[in-house]
Length: 342
Image (cartoon, rainbow, N blue to C red):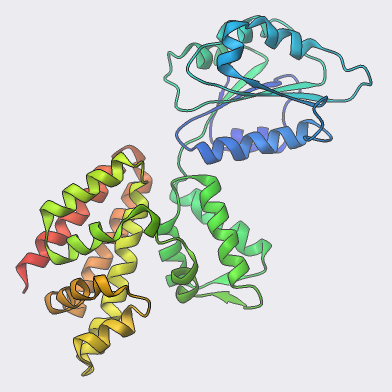
């Protein structure tokens, strides 16, 4: 069985084996699937924009005529050169075409198949794992180690350092989709261009706070002690396909801003003035909920809440399958804590 794991994946992607030209990329992280497919295609052909060099096929169309895959893979270009076939798998199986191709030797042709989550008994996955001239590569959400490397790579490329607290918030904000994470990092390095170090304020200013996903009601409900609304709004976010880590990240930013405002209150500022210092771009519709949270949470309790959220962020990356439950649990815990008011 040729199912690559860990460092074997990096080794293959860095130097694809011509004896195994069929590559199945599958898994929950669609961005990572695309990124790896792009890299393989770039290394396989001289010009990915040349339709004679790169053939794109739809998996569902191919399912109606699996032999077309063999025909395309075995075609010898009239003017020579390397070729690649990029297939977007759908709901219908074209595994028989892969099985036929498994007994052949395509010349100077790389076949890259992109798929979503596939169970071990999936015909396409079984065909690729069984074939001696194919490899299957799983693409799952980044672990903490993966994210750390991704951040380091992008910072190094931009000749930037990143402050420890900024890195902590950044780690909590990324991880659902590789391409989304990379795009956010590149946006951040562009924002910090000309500086020597990326700061916490840079991260807060640039990294998406998911306002488009309507996360504010979830966070506000948690810090107001409204557990019922947390459950309701969290359920809506899950139905919309929101990555749980993004919700935890929004709660972390909110807790950090509340903590800053709470310290201002301790120094004599009014709740209104403190709210403005912690939330300089706060929408007027949220002002009441922020001031209520500031009357409920002390700076010390908020510090403990930030630790609780950081632990949840880490757990959600380590246990991706349990991320929704982890995120909901920590938000409900905050809501219960808010109701204690002590």
